[in-house]
Amino acid sequence: MKSLELRVPPLAILFFAGLLMGLIAVGMPPLAWPASVRLGGAPAASMLGILTALAGVLSFRRARTTVNPLRPEGASALVANGIYRYTRNPMYLGMLLVLIGWAVYLARPWALLVLPAFVVYMNRFQIGPEERALEAIFGAEFDAYRNRVRRWL
Image (cartoon, rainbow, N blue to C red; front, side):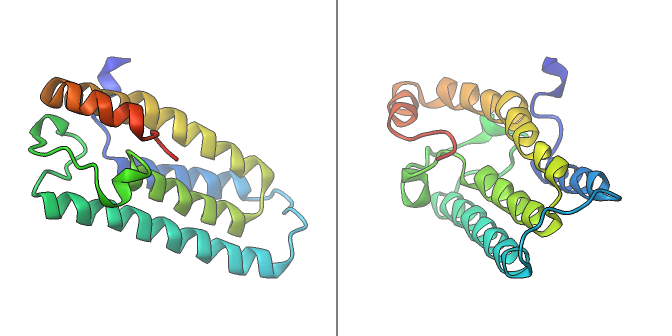
């Protein structure tokens, strides 16, 4: 399955996952969550996700390195400060939080199954290949960073 590695833009995966969640939710009875949870929790999780992803992008911009997820070999700096002190993948974590917000809004149990599928896909076809590229570029510096900071949280 190497043919899928670094081939599909992560934003496309985010939109596909969200669409799939919406399609799964059609005709399915909702969970009995209060409206305050759905209408308060959904935007809160989504906004946290957007801010988390933006923090990652801004850190890359400040370091003047590529944000292109399909070409990690173009990285010119290993970013390990800011939000990258807490997660190695704030952009993908942000996407997951947006999907969690969508799941809360939908309040359909089967739609929640897309969340772990998103994580598995990103780990296998995006993050793993990115980490191999960073290890090839930055060697021991990346190994030390990887040992210090978790992949997601």
